[in-house]
Image (cartoon, rainbow, N blue to C red):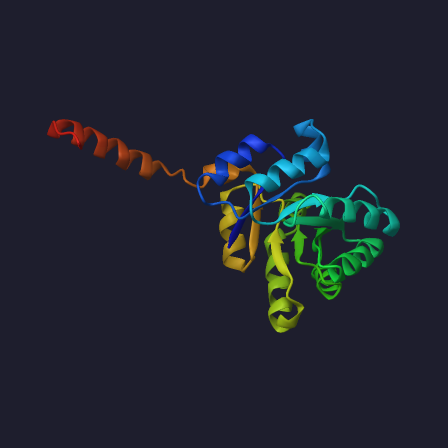
Length: 218
């Protein structure tokens, strides 16, 4: 499963990219607001750091506006993935942009039927929002499983499942088990995946034992 980081913070992205764990980046208007920098500048900077797909979301909600903005965003760098909402106009924009050779991430997916529509429209990625379904008492991970089943039934569709709105390490694990192609994860959650109390305890013991040997590695 590929790891995308869900942030517009270039410093966080540089830090994660240095580990070799990062396969791409997703942004959205809320993350851009937090970054408090010009949007196109943010995307250009990210694309210089990350070779993989970098999702940049359109602001318009109508087809003509999405196409105008999507083409502007696609010109920033070859790895820009234009992000559009899962609406009728969004699906139409997805089809046109995909036909033009632009990667498209269809976002705000909350049902398997929506995911099927996005795939037929040529989406590169579909972004089902796991955490937001959990918030209303549904099982967000069940949606990942349903989409996986449908896409496996029709491999010619070619759309990758990008599990979004992942809130914790357990979400990441379950998304991988359910067959998501990609998980987009907040920086803090990615960094938290390395943590385990037994790892910390074991390392503490090894450090103490090594100190007692009186040796150095030179």
